[in-house]
Structures are given as structure tokens and as C-alpha cells.
Image (cartoon, rainbow, N blue to C red; front, side, top):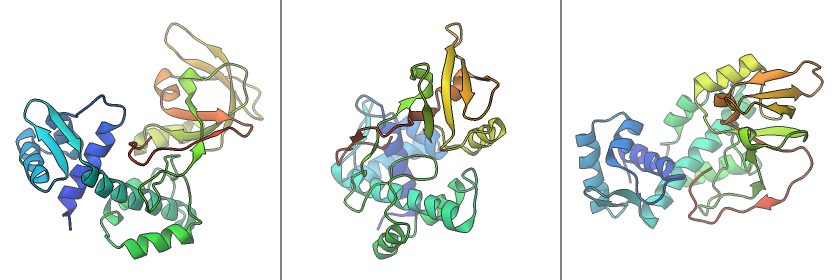
Length: 236
């Protein structure tokens, strides 16, 4: 059974592999878990000995199929616990990450499967991130795009966030934005990428900074086609 430290490293590599071409650096892994590069390098050797990563000096690290299965199971526990904390214990979406970081290490497949069933087999966590099923696959979710890239004059709905950090989520609260918020892009400013948007039932336009627009996933308000993530794809 992997230790808590090992699980944290495997999950960190899974997150870093998202959107990367090939392997991730030991330095990036160390920064992600809050360790020194030397400690991270030593851990990569241990994980390599267990067959959970492929690690070649100067060429970076990647998860093996076995390592990815473990990391996906940790991710599954984390996101299911976040869903439970928000839906059934009344936590806000900016309060659950650290609690779920603790709960994700409770390694009971029976408990997690029962939790999944109790929640109604949700596809998404409270931040709009896909939840892996028991087979390691992400369930089908609606197609989506970043608000920064969304066309003008379409009815859109906020369906997720790229950055689930507490500070960003609290900032969204100040702006009055949450999952399900409906808006329309009225004007895109080419100078800095900021957007003037109109929220549903609000007459005044609101200016959103590029840093916000680049971190919000949106979809058209009307039903959209679904996409299915292959078994070995990294999380979105």
C-alpha cells in the first residue's frame, strides 16, 4: 500500500502531466509537493523501483500504467469527498480542498464505491472537474471551452474552473460567479484580453480580467454533445 507521501507524489505527477508534451521535470514535481529537488529526486528513484514511474536523469518523469491507476484512484477519492462535503455537509467550494486532501488517503475501495453510489455517481466535482469512475475512466461530460476563447453573443453557462485554489474561488465569490452562472460575452478587448460580459438578469456590463477569463470553463446554455475521456487521459 502506498504511503501518504507516495500518494501525494503520484497525484502531483498526474496533475503536472496534464497538457505536457512527454515527461515532467523533477524540479516541477518538487515545487508541486513542497519538497526540495533532492528529496523529489530520491522519491522518483523509489517510485521507479516500484514500477510506478519511468525516471531518467535529465529527461524527466512519467507515470507508468500502474502508477497512473493508483494516481487516478487517489484523484477519484479526492473529488468524491469534495462533492460530499459541498452537497451534504454545507461546505462552500472554497473550503473543501484541504479537507479532501486528508480524506483522499483513506484507502477503502468499498467505502469509495459506496460514497459514489450515495452521491448518485456524479460526473463532476464542485469545481467542475471530471470524477474518475471505478474503472479509472472519466465519465462523459459536456464539451466546454475557456471563457477567454468563447465566441461573442452566445448564451453561456459557467461549468468549471481551471484553478481550484481557495483564493481564486473566493475572488469568484466577490464577482458573484459560481457554477451555473449564465453570461454572454459582449465585447473582447484585444489589448489585454479582458472581456465585457453581461450576466443573466443583470443590465450592467461587467469587466472580467484576463486572469479570470483564462480560468473559467463555459458551455453553451443549450444541450451540447458529450465527449468521452479515454481510460489513460489525464484529468481536465
